[in-house]
Image (cartoon, rainbow, N blue to C red; front, top):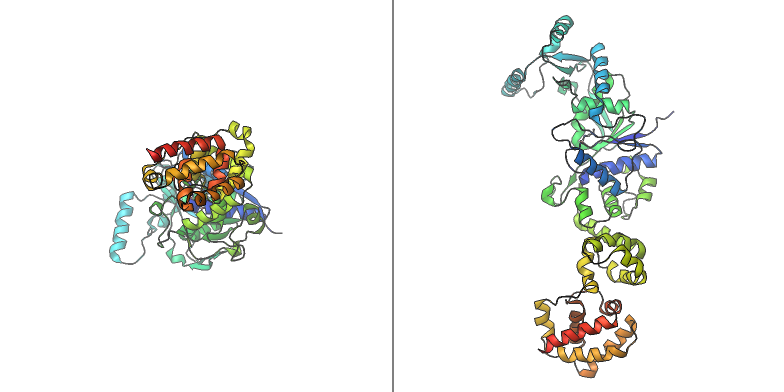
Length: 488
Ligand code: GLU
């Protein structure tokens, strides 16, 4: 019988969700979905000083925004809860009792100063071993019990089984790694105040939640042999591990703020689509077939496998993400894109949902003009503002285009020609293409003058389609006004 797949993403709410954390979440989620397993969200909030409820809320929001749903965890509950480490103290206490009883945990009374002195002495001796020297492990059981009973401050340490032989981590991504048992120190399981350390709490939770696979960043690789020893001390099955290589910036250094935005939320605020970011992050260290770049969530969920995770560090390349975002934007239906753009138009004060409803066809006609040009959604307001508000003609365009020889003539000829033409982009194009020859000017002079007149700038979406969307009355009024500017 195979054990059911149960995986978890266990962020510490000490900050917002980082793209690296998001990738870990995506892999766990995709693996659970592919194997018909359970994806658990657990909040590792044992660091009381740095964990906040806002960060937790923020992490949940970012995951939801990305389209990642969890089967057990905050907000949804589940049979293995609670899903916040701070609410699981009873579980840690119970596990520690088991380890006390079977002799795999012992109390250590060494003070912080004593320990610092020992560390210093170890450094000086150059032995290379800096772990605890196991002084208190030598106490008799009676002695130790009496001192605990008397209320002497103490921590609880793991009694590393010295005859264990190397601890073998059989990692799904990295293969076999052996850690010599001599390198394992009797690390602290529970602190003086009774709170569990990360390496202890994590194992108890993974064991109690029956986690089958631990998929996480390889910054935890050094913790893994220690965690395996705790699983074994408690007689639990050790889960299968898969350690993901780090994400690097383009300079080959660990991705950090220096490289630009690292939080998922920042990408939302910059106008990235969640499905594009999900796709991009999924391919940072995993591939469908080594070449397909567009892997939407449903394909990911149907095909994800641990075998195709790469050992090599992945490079976060914002240009690729931007390209991917543009690609998702272009492939969207007009109605879908309108609904994604609406919040940006609303925030810029350009349009409301009621406007979209009232002029639905107009908005649908706008989409082909912008879809090709948008790399992210935040670019929409500056791109289409001229369609909603009277443009201000910038100084440069005024000097470079409208005040140039011929601009006045061109604009009055264009105004005349447009008065009678059909108001479709095709008819507008045909009409405007006829103007330069009639008045003996270069097409560029004419078209640039019209573009500046109608849009306020020399850079805009396609001219004829823009004029069509602007309507005849507004187009002519702007051309008139620009004509006045050109000739005064
Ligand atoms: N809370 C830990 C972290 O955010 C979890 C590590 C793990 O997955 O065990 O790094």
